[in-house]
Image (cartoon, rainbow, N blue to C red; front, side, top):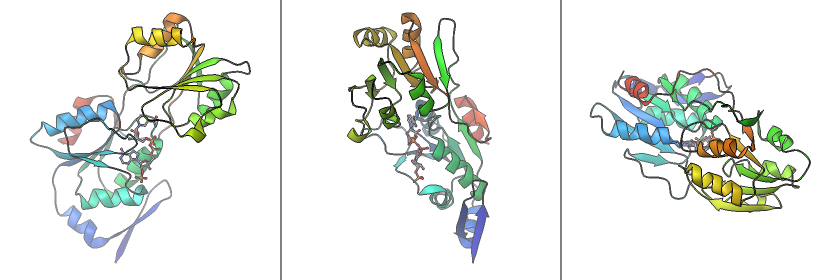
Length: 271
Ligand code: NAP
């Protein structure tokens, strides 16, 4: 016999009833942390040090040299909602913390759907978005397409600080000269005609960011509103240099219990 669970993103997951009932019969605490952020690493360290908890951190596998984690790690996609639901049940996961990057919208939607089907409680752990301060010259936009428009028609020297995903969208504005900062090399097909690539992983120091923007003759910055301290120096540097910042808003997520606090995430996992 098969059991079907329907979830609100229109996905139907089919799992055997014996798998579901054996899952229900084993109460325990085993956390799945969906990772890819500094908050996820910190939470993983806390879980590894807590004798009450058992857990695993999941990484998408996008970076060839991921930072080490104190907790057991698994790498690679689950195979959509169905794969993640199956993983939750087979691995007897009792709690999920979605600590992915705030712009990783698909895995977060998948987590909501899979947790709903498997009946596993979910908490989103995310960093608060940056809020503009006095002296900031932000141009708020909703997505990459709007960011491209916000750069204007006249050629400019742009610091494109959005990571490598989404770089291809800026091919629509080939008149600009782009400085890209990435962890992994972007796909050459994604690059605009005039670009320079530098490699770097935060945290970045304010003095270095100011020097980068001065020496790079940067006129405008494009960034995602990732939030957090590790990447904030570029925002401060732009403020001090009087540069415009095109600030891409976070994708809207469906309602899910959310915290900005590692302590709250630990309390959730121990509940
Ligand atoms: P995404 O668009 O939301 O997810 C695409 C697919 O990648 C998912 O459907 C899933 O594959 C897989 N995936 C994503 N995160 C995963 C995880 N933690 N564990 C296992 N599989 C995962 O995600 P993305 O924007 O490509 O980001 C990928 C990773 O990079 C995430 O871990 C995220 O936290 C991190 N990151 C993203 C950004 C950003 O700006 N988007 C910035 C910094 C770090 P299946 O459907 O096969 O399960």
